[in-house]
Image (cartoon, rainbow, N blue to C red; front, side, top):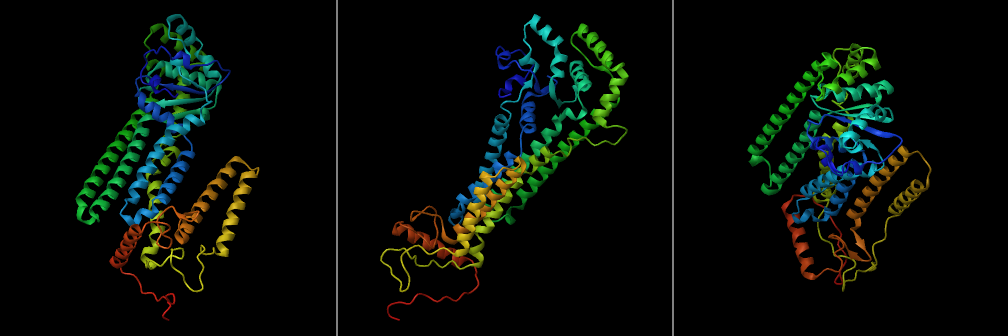
Length: 455
């Protein structure tokens, strides 16, 4: 389903049938109404076919972006804004790319692509629609308010339930999906506007009017969307309770009579099939059945995506700015500076702590065990994520202690190891650090400076 134009409308495409291939079984049979919006159908497929890997990629990219910009926090770079934009961009890219890669071998039945569109071949393909449904593993219903009003959609559901279990039917409510996506975008834009306001004006207190307007717009949008979604569910429940095959419509009168006869032959009567449909949508023997799509994992993960990125940005910012408030910011003389010698000290890099070496060796040993171990796929994923988080924390703590260095050259700015930078750049950095130190009150510390030649 890489080409979303196939879902936009019911018109025939010249190259639609070329996208199909002969198979013995079908993974997903796509059942939908052509009157629904094609764009949201494609979005629904991407979200339903997604995986937790999308959020893992978002988390890792946000952490990498945060680590990359940690050294720029003291130089008036909008740290959280950059991490938010980078994380959200990676989320959208992974949401669009990972399902295509994960389901590259998944076979989906779409009538426009799998049935030739000329008159004779189309009539024959429609007559064999029941055979396609019998060899399908899952039935994915893109629910819209007019779904049960389309007799062909009702017929597809009837044939599939005849040979499969109810658990094989996947129901996606299009209006609920729109609400979740709108809520996610609104949350992200709200967080971004608040960060921009704090960065441009220095504080959000003088600009509470913007916050009130944003909160009012968010409440109005969410309330309106939730009201429409609830109203749609009430109407859908009423339609399901009063469902009858005779109320479904079909463009061809001949097809209408044929499909009704086939449904009656499969279930014995139209009333029996109507009871099966009510049991599928409303549950067996309950009047207050809550839909499964209301609080499903996909919708909850989707709405929490902006806060994952914000949490990473705030956590990394708290770590790297911890020393600005509780540790002194006096720029010490680097041990590797040219023309400087200190009694009792060598010009080599400072020795690493034994504990740091043990942690490093332990992480490397753990990584080797994970790489060569034969464990279950789920456990392997958990170990990989745990190792990645531990290694990122170790790298961040090492950077705060020693700074990023590669072959003696500085990759990012650090007051202890300026590296081979020019004198002007060093003066500017030291001046900036002194300004930061003088502008923020800090506790007093006592230091024993290095002895000079006069002492």
